[in-house]
Length: 234
Image 1 (cartoon, one colour):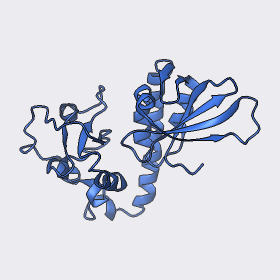
Image 2 (cartoon, one colour; image 1 turned 90 degrees about the vertical axis):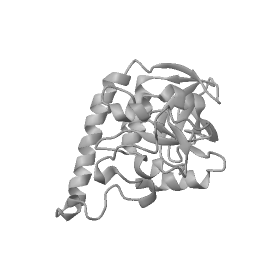
Image 3 (cartoon, helix red, strand yellow; image 1 turned 45 degrees about the horizontal axis):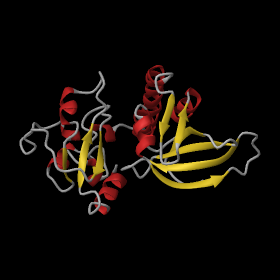
Image 4 (cartoon, one colour; image 1 turned 180 degrees about the vertical axis):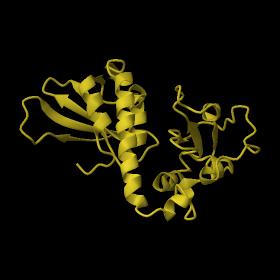
């Protein structure tokens, strides 16, 4: 979160604003749905207390954008406080919780937190898979050309380790738009023996410095979505 905020600060001449983005499904809080689409300058006080996550299990994000400012008719200068531990900009502080949060006083907290995260990701994958299986299959036009999305790739992407795995998994739901709007980074030949795949192409999801889409190319020149990774150490 801190690195994403730093990246937003670094590129604010190109992308001067941030847009609040919520998932907008039946598990999204009404308040967070209300904020969806708000576009405000990076330096606006709104982000001091509304930079996601904004509550337990919050899946919202803030994306860099050059779109014009739009407050959605909401008085962004007069808003109710969030729970204390979320009423901060975790991107600026680099901490999801303050040092005086009671969790930090629990012996073995780090180990418990890691186990909790693993359980959360397991639950998330189990919940998402029935929703995306079959429904996201298809073809989408990208900077490379037409890319095919199949269930095998969706499952690969869902299970791919990632430093922001929870966010990555939620983004998969919007894989068609991610591919369509992505930026080409590089292509490399497949040096491993393969009767099928000849190249790997890497695209970056706009406004996310740690979301890279992998597209494989077969011997006939067809493109297939493969997975999502968090860095370009290939």
